Length: 198
Image (cartoon, rainbow, N blue to C red; front, side, top):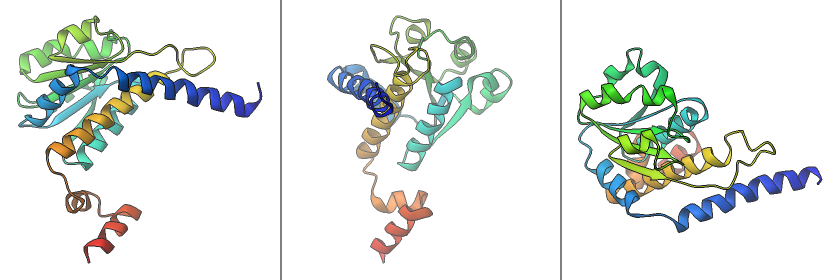
C-alpha cells in the first residue's frame, strides 16, 4: 500500500463505524437526551487519556450550543474536583472499556452526591454501564491504526455521540443563531453572525 492508501483506509475504517453507529441508535439515546434536557444543574463530562480529550470537546460543544457544561478529569476528581459536582447535575462518564479505574473510582462519591450518570462505552455490560442511569454503547470492528491499539475509531465514535447529543439538545431548546452569537462572539463565526444581525 502507498501512503494515500494508508490514509484512505484509516478514514474508511472510522467512517464505516460511524455508519454502523447510526444504524444502531436505540431508545437509550432518547433516555439520555431526556435526562440531559431536564437537568437543573450543569452537565459534567469526565474521562482520562484520549477519552478525556474527547470529553473536553464534548463539554465545549454542549456549552456553545446552549447546555451549560464543563469537564472534570477523573483523576483530579478523586483529589478534590468532585466538589464541583452537585446533586442536580448530570455526569457523562467516558470509558471505552467501561472498566477504567480512574473513572470507576468516582462512582462511590457520585452515588453519595446523588447526581444522574450517563456512560459512553463500547461495553454495555461493563461495571461503568451497569452503574449508570443510562448507558450509550457503541461497537466497532477495530481501531484504525495498524496495531489496532491506538484510540482512533473508538475516540471518533465517542466524539460523534457527544456531537449528536449536543445537536439534539440544541434543537429541543430552540437554540437560535442569536444565542450562538451570544456565546461565540469571537472568530470568523462571530464576525459572520455579527454581519447577519446588523
